[in-house]
Image 1 (cartoon, helix red, strand yellow):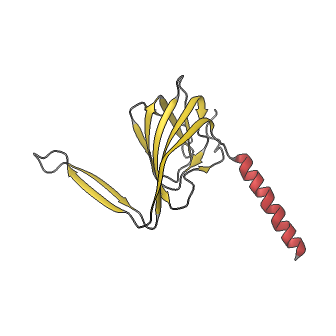
Image 2 (cartoon, rainbow, N blue to C red; image 1 turned 45 degrees about the vertical axis):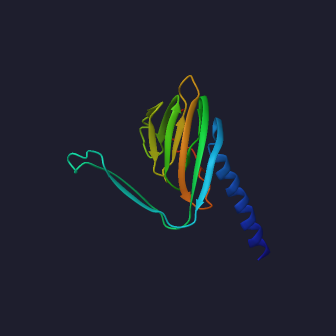
Image 3 (tube, rainbow, N blue to C red; image 1 turned 30 degrees about the horizontal axis):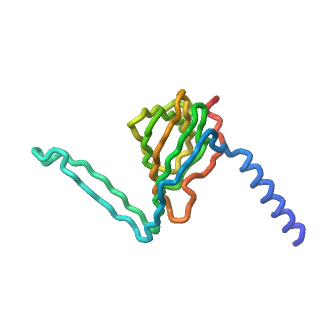
Length: 168
């Protein structure tokens, strides 16, 4: 029984060190928290707005539907030229605004490592669950504002190992 306990502790120590070694942490990133709030109840928000009152057939729609308590976290990131967020994922969706600079992101699920470029004044949605990296391949600071909706108590970012599909 004593050997089994020692084996379990040793395996746990080894695996935690191996997984930590495989993670790709951010580099050249400064993050400032703008705010965080807990929503203790389910969120059921549905809206349908007529964007062309003349035809009554052109609607913009949005749905937010959560089960259980949620945290909404808003942050601002500044990424120096050549910096990146490292490979990571999120447990929920994020709306990302590119405030200045240019964001280039790559998806671990894309074997061709195709860059997705988002310019200043544009945004993109990270649906959560996918492994990705955002890089500043420009010559000026990249500044993003991110609003993340995640399960209550969860970290908004999960470090992930390099998937090996990109050669940078």
